Amino acid sequence: MKRIFVYILATLCVLSETTAQVDSLNIKQMEAAKVMKPVSWNANRAWHSFNLAVPVAAVGFALMPADHATRDAVVERWDNDGINCRVDDYVQYLPVATQVAMVLGGMEGRSKNRWNALVADAMAAAMMAAVVNGMKYSIDRERPNGGSGSFPSGHTATAFMGATLLAHEYGHRSVWIPIAGYTVASGVGVMRILNNKHYVSDVFIGAAIGVLTAELGYWASDAIFNNRKTYKAKGLRLHRICNTVYKN
Image (cartoon, rainbow, N blue to C red; front, side, top):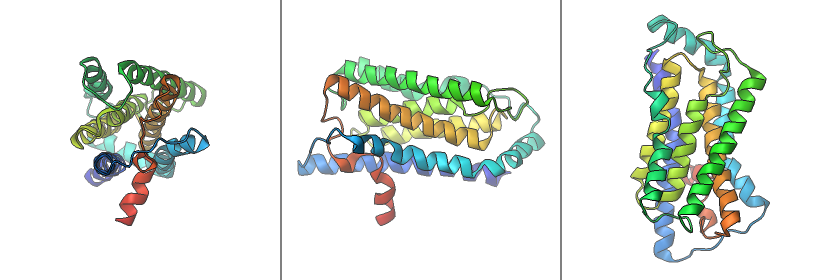
């Protein structure tokens, strides 16, 4: 059973923290080289926004056959309530709360101004809530512990949305900022499984929704504030992560 959770945590961390490291390093390298170029406002940017979320969602769907095996392992080790720890109910908000606090505190980020960042947060949160709740009530999948509304994990979506917002706004300052955010988000996902509140697939799909809505939130906010330099080059987009890691 320990191996199962190690694999889950490792997968979440690899998908998220490699994003954080490469994104931050690419920004610093390109700033030093002074080759910043605004990204064209076309369908390509929308496609780029899907390039990280889609693989994470694909992993979630691929893991669906293992859902009940994981649930059985949790129940066997503990009981129907899992480890019965509610810390994830609060920690899910830590990444976005950190980003908002840094923005309101006046720390300079990538956005044109603080309203650019706050509007991105609000739009991402609204989209995330609409997608998650819409899917929960329409699909109404039974939770591992017998409750309703299992698919997808709203806690995980909230945590990964916040981690992505934090990474986009302040990832250029230090690679440890997005690493910390995604580590917390990954921990929330694992806690949802250990608490027997969600299946593995619920967590991965929730993570994908969180990442995607954060991307789209910034995309929409940049359009409103005409901030075409937020993502200064195509090499900084999250969809480049997998290709960069693969080539290296």
